[in-house]
Amino acid sequence: DFIIDTLLSEPTIVLDSTDDSGTKGDNLTNVNKPTFLLGNIDADARYVTVEVQHGGTKEVLTATKDATGNWSVTPTGTWADGDYTLTVRVEDEAGNEKHSASLTVTVDTQITIDVIELVNDNGIPGDNMTNDAHPQFRVTVPGDVNEVSLSIDGGVTWVKATQSATPGVWNYTWPGTVPDGDYTLNVKATDNAGNTVTETLHFT
Image 1: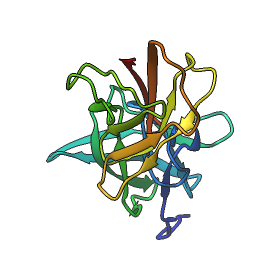
Image 2: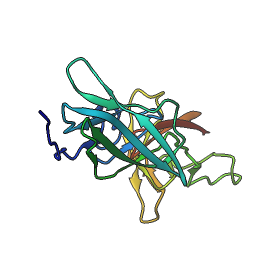
Image 3: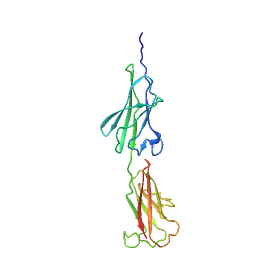
Image 4: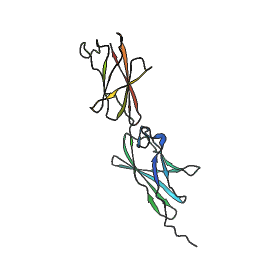
């Protein structure tokens, strides 16, 4: 007796939702060792590997199957920031071979606040002193930042800055009267990958 087997399902690959740290489904992550879930793997699969292309180099990862039959793959080492293109290759016992559609993900673990300015600094330039009871601030950040928040009460309350027409520039003018005194402005920025950073500016 013999068996003729010419059929093999086309595998799929997705970024594990727990590692999709930005908007779900955007394939943007701040996890530098993300896990990927493989689907549509036939029971007679003999070899299941994932080819990873990044920066002109290629890496081949071996997928693993858990006790419930689900396949996944995680890099053996951490990934640097950048774009990675992954393709699943499956070979079954009969030697049939199938490849998945490619998946491109972006690893982004970095975020900065470039500049925090007191716009109505009307003392000596750069001394961060103002006689305006409604201080105005300008924050410059990378273009992938999607939220900038400010606080002058130690982080108890936060207000959201408004993005200007210039990419990466956010503005906020305090609506209420700020009493005379020394203040620490906390600025918190969040980017599309879910990274956050906080910087401070002391002003009077």
